[in-house]
Image 1 (cartoon, rainbow, N blue to C red):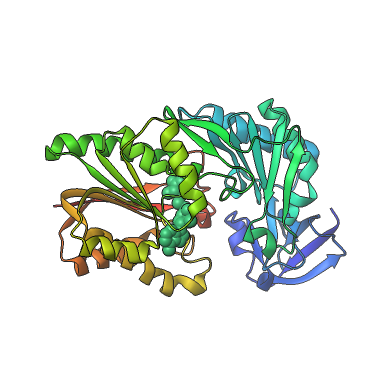
Image 2 (image 1 turned 30 degrees about the vertical axis):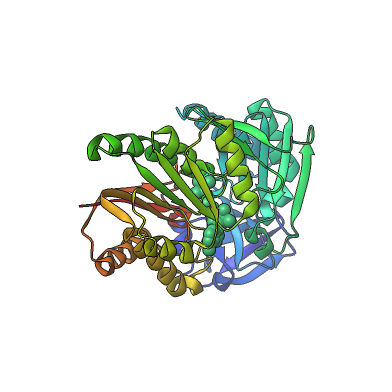
Length: 400
Ligand code: SAH
């Protein structure tokens, strides 16, 4: 322990509810001279112990809590135990895949530390000053807990920048990763570029929803008694597209603005010997309008855009964008067709997203039932004391 954060009066309330973030505005003063990432004691204005936390001198999130138990000591053994627990919890998940999130930051009580497994390759993100300070301990613990020696770093996220840390990517342990790593997801083969792909290479969080699309494609054909045409907007490397084809869609049109993502998507389709795909490089906002003008209709539509609202400041503009694409997707939905529409913006709540989608339904002039709410898979759990962790949300609608 190198110092103490003394909070302003009343600012202890969120910590007493075990919320793991201390904002700069809550801090009255810093005692001692803690270094970046050092473990500090967080205390109320009255001096009551609240938490052990990692200090981030330049960040709005001035400290992220490791533990709320005063008798615990935050050392290598403590961190290694948290990593081992997180990895052990994933082992119990029946996911039928070798691409799994093993450690999910705050949700696994390791704020800022993310680790994914792609077959034999591990990929980590050290997004906070605390994770950075303990990087060797965390990485060694991960290698030990998984029995895997190849670790690549992708600490190039905006979160890290906000903590005042420079981007860092490269090999941390073991060998250079292959240009494209082959993973398997519900029996489908996919290639992942862990060096240049989004996040750590792939959107592991959408695994269950891709599997749902596969089932829906099959059911829609039987229910509607006609071949299923699927549209996958913001397709990236084709995860949802492959799932729709595997489910029996007769035609899958996929749209993305990135030529690189589309090239990998087409390779993924070829790898699975799927011949029903059309790949279109375009802006989805424009493409949806063009498809309507062309009189196109689809039985199954997926909208999985990038994060439109990176902070609370962008919520209004983001809401407009979500509404625009949802509205224009609904206009392409054949009667009886189904739409899965997602938002991965943490700043857009589940309730707000549902309101936005309802607004789109009203304006589209179609009647829709919501069949279910969707979220990230269970390897991305939500810590109940940290609602901010709920970033991915989706609605499954059927046009009636
Ligand atoms: N559904 C994917 C992940 C989507 S990521 C999966 O399951 O793997 C979001 C994608 O949207 C990225 O590939 C990005 O290139 C693309 N994108 C961002 N803005 C876009 C736009 N305006 N039009 C089309 N694609 C866009």
